[in-house]
Length: 433
Image 1 (spheres, rainbow, N blue to C red):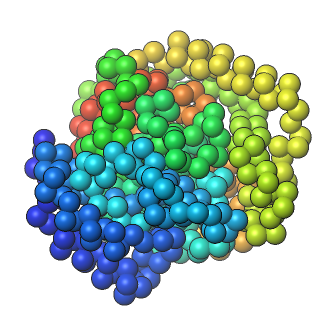
Image 2: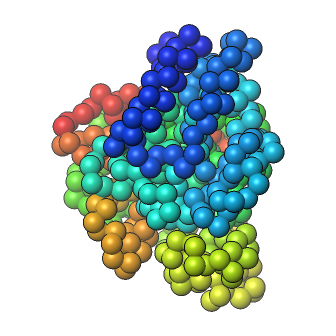
Image 3: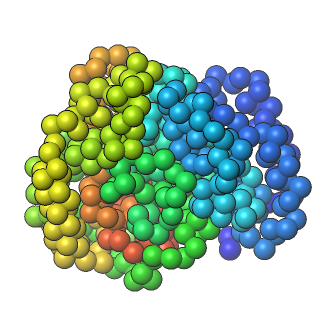
């Protein structure tokens, strides 16, 4: 195990004390990261760390997205309509596994209401500011989690990813975000957005830290143990149009850096991704979020985020009949099979997000909010539809930080994490800023 991990049993207490001090001082860069903190319980957890010294995660400080049950706290999922629910009786299984690995749980982090957007805005609890670009949004829906890691108050953030909710904020804040194969981490005790697409995973500053968290949460199940082939495929017909110029330039430079190190990279037309362009992906989150929260939608809409409960998101479920929804599920199964036959064990390479983080000011207009939301989710959501594992690595060029996304078919999780480590080093050493 590499020695450069930022945590240890010996430093946990002073590091936690420093975090509490910074949060209590109301540092502007830390505002709106948390919906609720667990500081008193975190101090009690320190006393138990001696029982977990065998774990490589012992002493790691972890933030938890506000849709995971944490014993003794209310799981609000960024909403007001669940704010008065009963506190959770037990930890969600992945959170319990991290606690048992000696992680110190810091607090419930802010998020888009019910995780229904890739932008990270929350009208009820405020929105944390982007950690590297002042005046800009954090990305979402795991907004507080990404900023907690990027601002150095959490080592690892646990979140969910339905269409990019780990990888988008990771890309926007210059950290690593990993979306595992859905079946490998339990979603029990985690409030759903789309049962078809939701995945649970970590964000951290490095790949190895994400890997340690993933191993603890996954119990090693579901990963096929199949190795990825060290060859990159860039889709010639998906994910590279409408790139903002700085993202385009940075991604091209990242590709060049990999080619200079003799990595095999080729372009390929993906028929599955061509079909994805006309696939009614919105059916999943619209219909399935209504299945989860229809009571609130019908009776408490006045206290919901109007952009989430509005006609383009939850409201749009009324446009879908049962037969259409079932056809969409069937079509997805076919897409997954086609995608797997096209990608095989190779790795898809794309920019995580096609734009740099937008400003808060640009979010005022509802139409612009909707347009940008679709744009930021485009590249990442393919991995959810196709049931992939996918990781976003930070890369800085000309002073602009983007995410470089590596995606593999289901079950290649540990192999992808292993493969991503030298790539991360390459991209990190190639700062042309």
